[in-house]
Length: 273
Image (cartoon, rainbow, N blue to C red):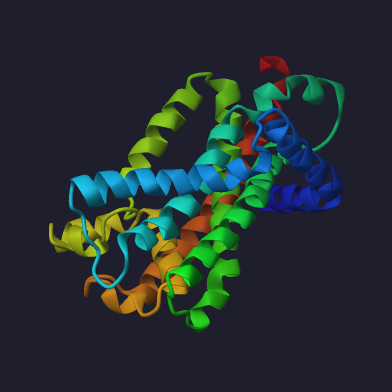
């Protein structure tokens, strides 16, 4: 526990470096593209249109009570933030090997700065999503105030996983390819473009196993925040309080585990890079 506290203190102490690295990442990322920062909004939006065409137009998928486009958007936008962060963070230590060799600073700042950069990217997309919901005349409730807390949960979960994959990538260079495959499978195993009611139709035991996926909870919480009375559409086998508690526990646990795993392998970085 003392090691975890020390790493968190280091992140706070070096917050200016963390911020500078995040801004540098954003500048490098959008320096060449013509549309620049607009890609942070266009990529998830285009993904939503593609999934809508495939699942709604071709496969005739439907979601009760809400437009399918809106239902997709409330999951695909947060997922885009997560998957972009993990993909970029996986190779972040190796990509910054020269900086690591020449300068002394807490190494966990590098993957955390990648997540921070993607969080900055996600905020305009989140605003656009809100404006689209307003355009579709979706009604909001007091649960909209939960969005910052849900975003915080997702961010600490993402940081924890980013620390894990970035440190493992230094040890085993195949990790980034494994991560790409797992992210693809993870999205399809999460209720992004189908409802939990469909999962509940398989069996009660399968549903209990399925909701262990943290993105079941995160997607559900986002939808409760953005979509009026969404909690009432959940199948009877899903207890929203239990699901919320599990999501909080797993997000915090992955964050702490990420700090521990990163610390364990950090001493080997200089020799392996």
